[in-house]
Image (cartoon, rainbow, N blue to C red; front, side):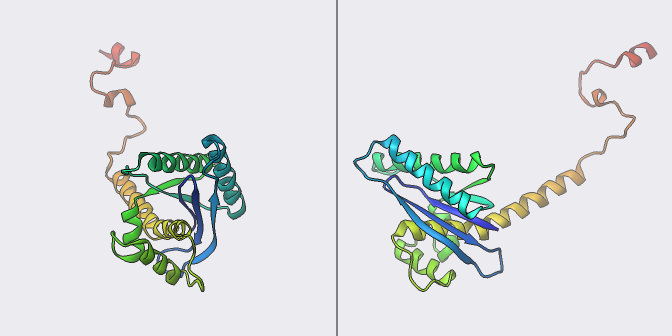
Length: 200
């Protein structure tokens, strides 16, 4: 699985691509930060983020895009910009038919460090170690994007397998309809077919 992780933000939008699967060594494919000037018009900043994310998707051909789920913060302007960048990431993925997964910050921290309350330094250190990087990814937005991708490789595949198993179990337990049994007869209060009305 190849996952493109996005740590959304207006000023700095982290992008990290990780390849691997559960039980295997992870590989860092790419990491970058899309930057936009704070004094630019918001619409132009969002356009720049969209172009950067679209270029990354085209270049690295991920199987899925993992985006940090936005939570409310005390700073309204910050959370608004983060939410806008998050929406742009989801649209960029959807436009190319890619599935989008949302992971909470605590979920990502727990997956990477084992502690849902880990600080940014701990996340960066573990990302560096897990991916076998010689140099820690900077700034923190870059490390967070890689952490999101790692989280989805480990947790997303497990969730997908669980969903598939549950779907298969439901299918096997569902009553089977014979070919001769009319569909209408299974719907309470349905009108009998013309043939059945004549028979009565």
